[in-house]
Length: 270
Image 1 (cartoon, rainbow, N blue to C red):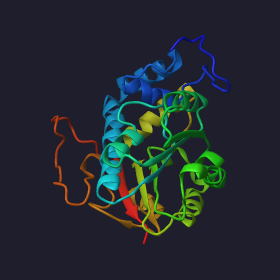
Image 2: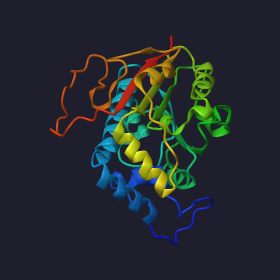
Image 3: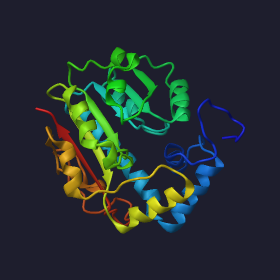
């Protein structure tokens, strides 16, 4: 993307995690500052590329299962980032054509591009919002236009909660979301573990001026599923999470080293 491209509210002097992910995934909606930070991360922690790819693969597996097997027809993807390949609406609507999807992100560029891309899809919306303020997201008119919270909904928090520090009270945030989710709803989470490699990534992000992140232990992540019953393998290493009934995977199909510092889980609300 040209550095001269102007989108209101976009700060091109500091890297954006959404735009860095876009760069990792081969997209073009990023700036030099994003590419520099991402390249620095790839040099210091080569597995960071695999981290992004693994999150996308997990998201695809979880959404496909929920749409194809669990009967979910509403998806709220918070912290969705820039539109890329195999987006939630593409996966869900391939399995169930009338699935409704709302993407939420605080990055103005992600929102602008998402709205332009999805303008012709009547069952998909892209809105600006901050996970730290759940009521504003849940009561946003475009969200309410597509999502009926009296019916089961899947709330997706993929690779986003580790940007929420304890000072922002993630338990409160998840409690507010849970209160609005009808029985039969699902919560989808992936999260960085407290490990030396994520701390090195965090150091690079901080040095580049990107948002700070907060790795957590499994014991700190599990309470995020309070009120939900974990399905499949429970809270598992990211590449190992498979939908119920799927064959477990001990190694990645491409033979690369398994990431051991990310976990993922999907919980159902009874």
